[in-house]
Image (cartoon, rainbow, N blue to C red; front, side, top):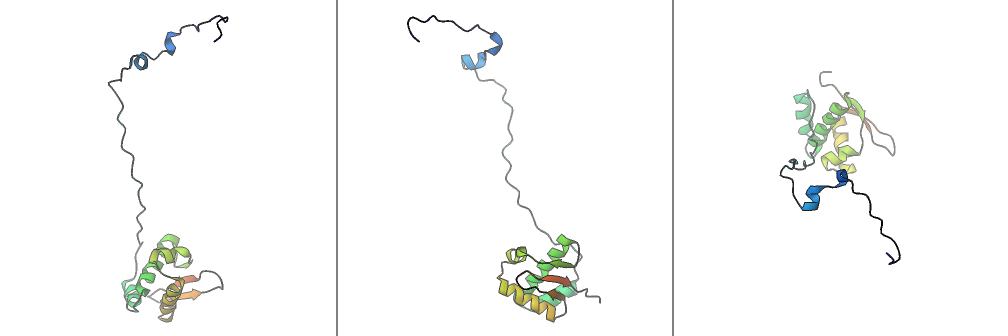
Length: 133
């Protein structure tokens, strides 16, 4: 401010003054804050009923075939139908390579537990065959 300028104070408005802040007083009541919630991991589950004989037969084929069979039933629960198209989630769920997954699916088809419809360059469609006929 220049010496030749006149000082014009702003009018004092009491409602704009926070006395606690100005005097350094901390309010005695501070609303409790709940601790931040840890992100909840979605828990996956397999929706039944799943025919035990079907799973037993798939598991007896060895290797990762039993794991792939259980993952197929997981898809049944997601889709609400026994026919569905696979996607990359199956490989992620099972921790398998494409080659191992395809080998397991071929074993299941040879055993008559599923029917595969393969299209070049895309994931196959699967139909789980009813063990009752």
